[in-house]
Structures are given as structure tokens and as C-alpha cells.
Figure 1 (cartoon, one colour):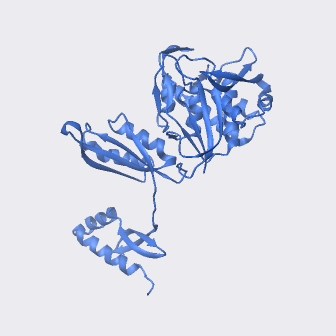
Figure 2 (figure 1 turned 30 degrees about the vertical axis):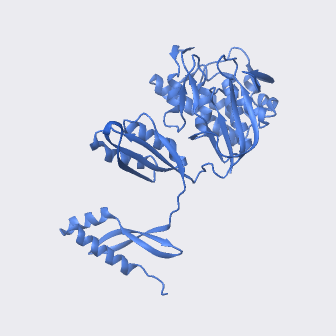
Figure 3 (figure 1 turned 180 degrees about the vertical axis):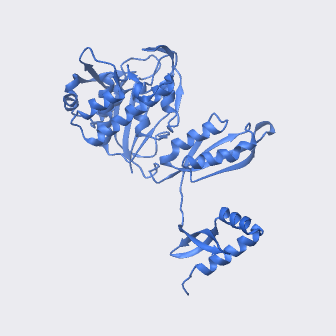
Length: 394
């Protein structure tokens, strides 16, 4: 599996992503990117830089003066007018849709009404398009991101002084499956950089076991006193990185949730895309009774499941790990039990049925309709399943 791992220990921004991709060789023709955006006036320069003693590539975008404030519809027109590949343009628009949704959530307005001030500037449009162009060219099967340093302190925006992490940054991370960490007295992660990573990656984790093919290092615009202000992109081959069809177990220990809420929690996790969800009674420190809530989820649903676990329970932290999963081939048949249809899930091994489980909701509904004990309906359904299944003679 071909994977990419972003090291965001010093945060992330659009120009840092461009620098890392350019350094890696995935975005070698910056002049072509500038030409594609010629209708709004863009020049792009790349140069070697040093940040905290580390060699890196710095990319600077210069825009023509007097740029207007743009809304999402305007940005769509700018992107559509380029001659870049449709796949790149589609992902770039999706990034700006994420930004618009985050701003709308923060400011209590609609997506179409959001005016992009900082993020709508031409350099951010260039950053997003360039990042999507470079990532498409790498043809990665999976992108993993380290915990993203968000920074601290405050930042001056078109809306005035805002705390860091900014509300938009937190809104972007919400439900994304990526993890942010604070630290430092300045803003380290910009909404543009976060939106690109939230669009392209769904997994936070350390660098996986991999054969390293190439490393790209992108420089931030500032020299920071406490860290090397760079983003590193490591590309290589690994058979251990979670893929689109692999599975994750997400867990949290909870000792302060009203137990009447647990059925709704399980239902919410399943609705978010988990294949299974369950509770395990545990004993925590100081002898406190508690539960571990677990959800088995495909990688594609990891962000939604994590979001559901945070919103539906009282936990403030999660853990997850990749697991193997092997499932038997299965199909659902319907059998008639005393005039009522009952669905039955049948599992097969090597083409032979090895188990059959009646749908219990159908059993209870039929039992209620007939006024008979549920256990009698279950026995009749099992007998009906045996008659319905044909097992080849040995």
C-alpha cells in the first residue's frame, strides 16, 4: 500500500503544504499552476529555506492588488475557470465547502453567505488548488496525519481578535477524525491547511511502519523560537497502514454517564457507520464502576463515529487501534412462520450454510400478532429455516 504521512508537530498552513509537495517533486511545475490562475493574477516563487536548523522549501504566492472578498459561489467560478484536471478542481471546491461550513457554523450564518476574507484571498485559493494537484499526482492509497499542533494565544482577523485555536479551526476538526493539540503562544495551524488535511485524511497517528521513498519538507513563513516551523510529508510503501476496507476499534472509558443514555449511544454509533458497538463493564481508579464503550468501524466512517462518541457520551478522549476482520459470506432469506414473514440471516463457509439466525424483531412482532410466547415463535422459525435450507449431501 502506498501511503503518505504528514508530520504536523509545528502546525500546518497552505503554503507549508505547497512547500512540502514542491520539495517532494509532486508539484514541480509551479509556473503551470500560476498560469492556470492567470485570470486572477498570481505569481508563485519557490526557494530554499532553513527553519530551526532544518532545510526546507518555501513557497510564496503573490496576488494582484485589489482582490475582492469572495463567497463560495465566486470561488467555484475561479476554480472552474482553470484548466486543471477535474479531479483536482473537485477536491479543491470540497476543501472550500468545508471552510464555508466551518465559518457558517461559527458565525451563525448560511454557507452561501460566508465571505472569505483571509481564506478567500488569492494565495489561499492557490494553496488549496496546488495542494490538491500535488496530492492527486502522488496517487496515495492512504494519508495519515500526526496530531496537529494548533498553537495558542490569539490572532487578529477580519472579525477582530480571536483565541487560538480559532473557532473555525475547531469547527473544521470536529468530526473529522483528525486530532489537534495546543501549545505555543502563536497560531500554528491555519484554517486553509487544516481544511486540506480534513478533506484528504481521516486518520491521526504516528508514522507507520513503511519503506520510505521520499521526504518533502515545507517551510512556514516564520522562524519560531521553540520548534522547526516545517511540515514534513513522508511517502512510502507499507502493508500495515489502514486501507479503505480495513477496520478500526474506537474506545473510551466512561464513568459519569446516566446509564439510561447508553441505548441511544449505541444506536448513534451504528447510525454514524459503525458495524458494531458494545459496552464492557469495568472498574476504574478509586473503585469506580464504569463502562468501556467500543465501536468497530470501517476507516471511511472513523471521523463520523468519533464525532458521535464525543457528542453522545461525556468522554473527553478516545483511543483507537486497527484490527483485522474476517466475515463469512452471508445472505438474508425470508421464511413463513404461521403466516408471518420472518427474515433470517444465513452465513456460509466454503459455500455451505453454517449458521442461520432469525431476525428477532420479526419474531417478536409475529408472536405479538398471534398472541403466543416469543420462545415458541423462535422455535418455529428455527424449524422453518431448517426446512428452507438445502445442504448438499456428503
